Length: 163
Image 1 (tube, rainbow, N blue to C red):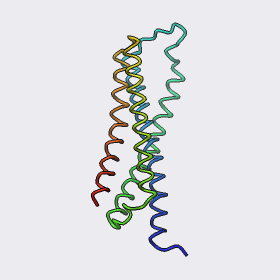
Image 2 (cartoon, one colour):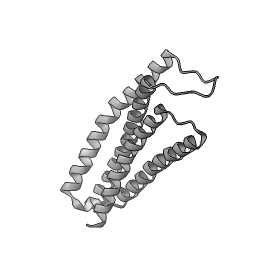
Image 3 (cartoon, rainbow, N blue to C red):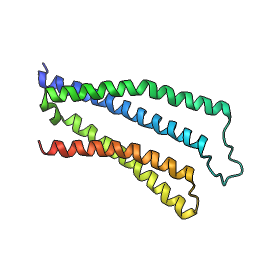
Image 4 (tube, rainbow, N blue to C red):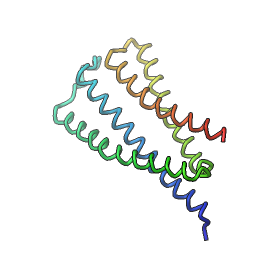
């Protein structure tokens, strides 16, 4: 039979999987909602004559999707985050769970890839002379949101090393 320690670790791993899923749904929907708002207030300069600015019906659909994802993912993320923090404070041995470390490192890789991808996009657009206020604002939004995620979990990794 599994020991109490291994069942705690399994539950902690399960919670962390759900935590990271809800975190990325939240981060993505928040980013896309803010991009939507920026695109409404600061229209993009399109160099493609065949690219339309979007229809009102599609815009309304997308905004409802983003808002729905925010409304569902934020409470889930808040619950799993606070629950995981509480369980870790109660049982500091959970900080050493391999599944927690694995998921944290996967999270660092994903958030870094998003930030690096946007930096590559920025450099590409700078080199092609295609940088607008809309693009820069959306770039900053994405890099700040995913940069905060990366920084938070990098700090967690460093703190875990000192234990």
